[in-house]
Amino acid sequence: MHPSVVAITGASSGIGRATAILFAQRGWRVGLIGRSAETLDAARHGVVTEGGTAAIAVADVADSGQLEAAAAEIEAALGPIVVWINNAGVGVYGKFMDIPERDFRRLTETNYYGTVNGTRVALRRMLPRNRGAIVQVLSAVSYRGMPLMSPYSGSKYALRGFTEAVRAELTNDRSRVHLTMVHPPAVNTPFYNHATLHLDTPVRPPPPVYQPELIADAIYLAATSRRREVKVTEQTIALALGNKLAPGLMDYLAGKLGVAPQLADRDDPVAERDPNLDRPGRNNAIHGPFDAESLSSSPQMWANRNRDAIGLGLGLIALAWLAGRARSA
Image 1 (cartoon, helix red, strand yellow):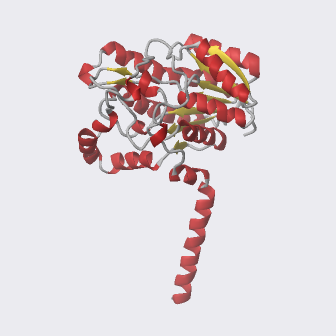
Image 2 (image 1 turned 135 degrees about the vertical axis):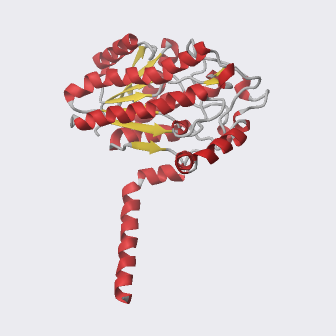
């Protein structure tokens, strides 16, 4: 796919902002969508610093009208949107019975309906042109729900089913618009400072933790190579396989081992609260406070990038084995 115009929701910080910079470095014109003009302007400055061109549009993804207007604003400034990335998301932590219905609903409106709205807005533009790619930024928990994360896990699980259904419709219509998913693991972003808590302690990403630039690389790969989905790390694959092959065991392990790794010390940097469930967050950094322990690479991402070479190598090994068997027969 030749560089053109990409639109990114949740572009003010974290994965969205890292992705905007990566696309700019690859020559794309970048549309930045978020709830705060101030933080979006800082993200735009980061894109321009990398030599890119950017436009900002303020919108709450839960409001389909605002999102439609934002897309029109970006296209007026940059041209037709070729890649749309549904990245916006918020977090609410706590035991299910301790989370107010209102907070559960608000997260669902942002994470689930925000992505549904973004997909509709993008398809309105891409279907008549019969080209484009839509990237759903989901999560490892879209394959295995985790304790303390029932609203978030539910929204990501639902989006996987939604994406598969819409993809099947596009296939039936023989559309060339591509719908893909990216499944990150725990990532070092301000997400954990932004999360709304119904707990006595702050929360943190469960180890191992990865840098957002690695996720941006996966998003770029998914957007430009027509992959069905990209599982970013081996931990994501392990959760997906474990839940498929031994769901009962995964229930037990998640219940017994899944809570403690998510809880931070009271003096941990994530104890500095900046909740963004109802308002834009002030922290618009790309990284969270876990740089010292975060990984910048993953064997699984290497495999994702080199899938064809790995397939060729395995094929050659199989041919050599068959030839050896034939000679010894």
